[in-house]
Image (cartoon, rainbow, N blue to C red; front, top):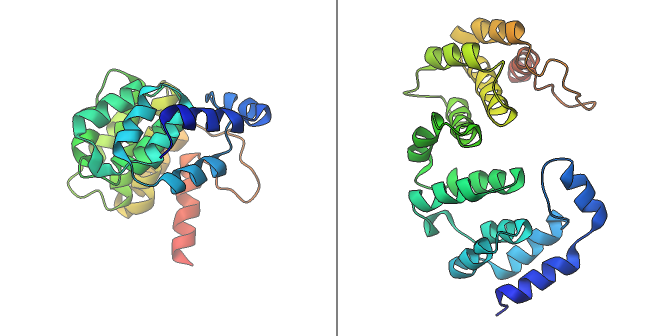
Length: 220
């Protein structure tokens, strides 16, 4: 069974300066190809004790590997909260939310706890979980109230918070015909991500375009 030191050495050997250069532009600080990282995770499978040791190294690639060899049931809500607050890079936060929070039993508890956090990065996680709930129907959520908050705050929100607020705006418009016109109007008023560079054959994150395209596809 490999030790943490063994795995750190293996990750270091996989470090690619070209991958690092690309990742740095996105706020990350590791140079390990993610397909190779996933292959290591698949080899190790679920090992919660090893995962905690890897996380404790504070190394980004090691933390991504820690997430891969974890299961949602390995952690309490308090531990997941602490891990999000300790995460230094976008990729670690994204994988933590996708692999451990959203798939676990504490997703709603943490969504509520994080939603109004004074740290925009933590609040952004709460808003992202809210967008996921809206996409699944949003039962029990005050969608009109969310639109009020988005209209008042999204324009000047930091990027870590603005993006998931915009996701929520789009999901409200996509999934709620009665609120669609208002969601589009808010997007047109705020113009958030209107000029975001979008590759060919990809949908713009600008909410009015995003909403219109998803509704069009659903009608086909």
